[in-house]
Length: 234
Image (spheres, helix red, strand yellow):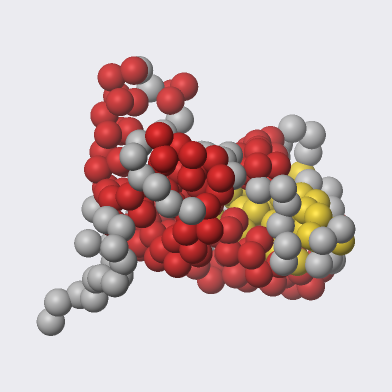
C-alpha cells in the first residue's frame, strides 16, 4: 500500500511549498516578505497562501524531523538539560514560554502557560521527560517553581543553579525573539504553542553551529540538511 501524498490536491509543486515553509519558519521574515521573495523567483502567490501552507505542512515537516532525530537524541541529551522561561505578550496579556535545551543547545521541548508556578513547571517537566527520559543534571535559574516541581518528581538533587550556568537556555530564546518581532507578536496560546514547536524542530535541523567547524565541513553539513529537507513527505 502506497503512502498518502500530502501534496496530492495542490497545484503548486511540493518544492515551492517546502521552500515557502522553510523561509517563513527558519528566517525572521513576515508572510509578505516571503511572498515578495518568491515573486522575485517567478512564483506569484498571496501571503495568505504562505500562512495556509505553514499551518498545513509545518506540523507535518516538524513531525518527520523529530522522528528522524528522536532515536539518537535521548541517550545523548540526557546528560544535562537547561530550563528557562521567557515572557510573551498575547493580546496584551503576559504568558510564559518554557524551553528545555540540552548541553549542546538542541531544543528538546517548548511549553506555553499562563503562569509560571509549580503546576506549570511540573507539567512542563513531565512533558519533556515523557519524550526524552530523565536527565542526569538539570540547570535552572532561581525560580522556586522548578525546585518545587523537581521535589515532586524526585529529582531535586539533580538541580543546579548559579550565575551564568544557564546561558545555554538564555541564548536559545534569541532566534524566537527575532521571529516574534517579525510576526508582530502572537494572537493566541494555541498559535504560539504550535509555532514554537515547529520552529524548534526546524531550528535544530538547520543549526550546524558553523563556529565549531571549518568552512568545508559546514558546507557539507548544510548541503546534507537541504537535501534531506527536500525529501520530506515523499
